[in-house]
Image 1: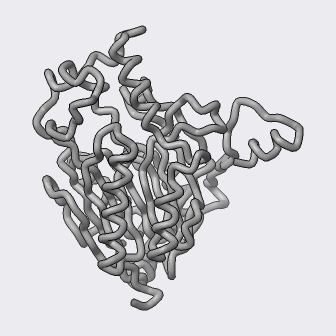
Image 2: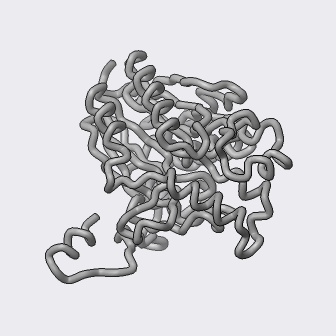
Image 3: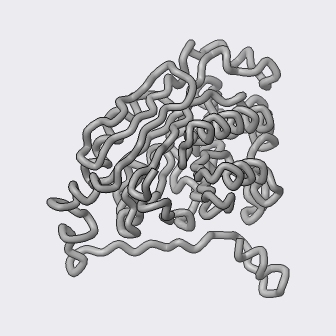
Length: 326
C-alpha cells in the first residue's frame, strides 16, 4: 500500500469491565487481528482499558461520603493504567512487532500527579512501539467529574503516519472548538474521536468535524451490555438494579473530508471495522476551505495553547528534574 493510503481498524469491543488484565488480553487479540489484516493503525474507544464508569449514573453517585462510591472508585483505581509502571509495555511491543500505530483510550493513574487520581487519557503509540503522547481529557463530562480529574494541554499533539497527520480527542471534548483548532493548526488531517459508546454521540459530530476541518474523522466507541458486568464487581446488585440491557451500543464510524460517510455508525456489533483512507481526498476538499490555511485570518484571530504538563510539585534537584520531564 502506497504512502498516500492508510488502512485503519476501528476496534469496537466491550472491555472486561474494570479488569485491567482481562481487558488487555482482549486488546491484544484485536491488535493481532488487525495486524493479520495488514492494518497500519488501530483505534480503541474512550477509557476502554479498563472501562467507562457506568456505575455513576446508576448508583446515586452524587451522594457525599457514600461507602458504595468509595469502594467502586477504589476498585477502579486499582485497575487503572500506570504507564510509568510499564502497564502498556506489552501493547508497545505489539505495535513494534507488527509495525502498527495505536490510539488507545485508558483510565490513567499517573505518577506525576501523585499516583492516586484518575484521568481519561488517549495514548498514541507509534509504529516503533514508542508512546508519543498521552492526552488527558481536558474536562470530564457531568458525573464523570466525580471519578475523573481534569487534564491539561500537554497531549494536544499531532503525529505523522505515512502521508497523514493524526490527532485525537476524548468524547465530549470533541465538541470544544478551541482544542479542535489546536490540532488543526498542527496540520491534523485525520481526527481520532474516541467515545465510551453509542451512536447518539457519534452520528452527528463525526460528519460535522469532517466538514469543518476537511479531514477524515474516525469515531471509535465501545460496547457495554448488562451481561458485560463481571460477577466480582463491587456492589453489582446495586448497579444491575437500574442498568438497562444495553448501556453502550457502539456507533463507530468514519467520515471523509467532504463530511460524507465512508462507514456509517455500526451498532450492536463487536469486532474490527476496517477502512482505507486516501490522502488525495484531503487535498481535494482543502481546495475551497482550509480552516487554518487559506481560509483563516490570523491577523484577526489567533489561539494560544499551553502544552506544559501540569504537576502540583516541582523539585529543583537532579531526581526532581527527571520527574518534572515526564
